[in-house]
Image 1 (cartoon, rainbow, N blue to C red):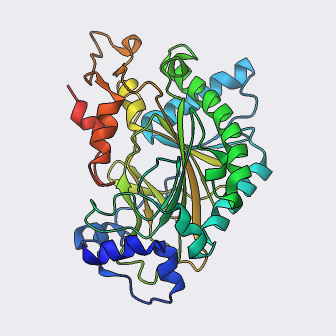
Image 2 (tube, rainbow, N blue to C red):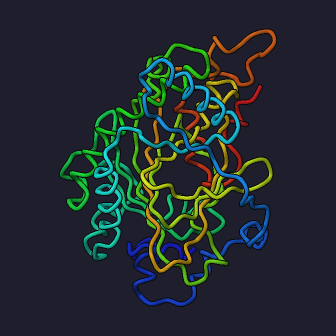
Length: 352
């Protein structure tokens, strides 16, 4: 714990360790053997499987929309993950956003250290491992957090190197979130606006992960397996790769597709859909490449945290009774914040 505290208070992050020239990772980054055994080559991975890629071209035409809704329903109910192309977000916006996040993480330590904090009071936080003090072992990554909505963090609190890009990204991602939630609603057979009406798109948080080269990638991970405690997540990754999704008992590589965005179902949407949609476990391997891996996730969550949430009444019947009890998102997120980012979905706690 003393070493963990020293690392945290140094504010250098994992990138700072790499820049110092270390050839062995600090012992608090070393994961237990039972975790590492799951990452060995050939250990329950399925190279023959790929998560679906869905083309959103013509989403506003009746014929195309019905096909897209069917594809999304199938992807959400099987993998819980899918990639989208032709999503209406300009390629230049994608490139600028990911380059700006990479640029922030490559800034000198003294510049990044000004943003290093374990609180999100200002709406902006640079940190290494949000669960550093709760987890069994740390993971090889640093993260920039920015609150996007319902009210974005004050612009002068956002690092200058990525400030304009964050504003532009939020504008695009907010619009895309509405399109996706509408398609997901139609896939459930409920009104297009149902999730939006429940404030499921109001709270938006961006995390910009940076996974530097790891000198001992066989001893640690980039991000332990977990599910997302939100409604839905939109992820942009660069071309380095390393993300894996659990499908049955196997792990599937989410290979980068140029210009694509990755969408995944969160725990709350699994509950709201009464398990028609599945929130899948996913993880990131420690990066063995000289090129850093960069990814940007936006988590969409409910704005009214003290309202009661549970399976939609429209999806409950005598043949398919409610699988979860009702709860507030405040309670849900409090439970999430007290545990490490590891393990099964919190949705199990609310099972009937």
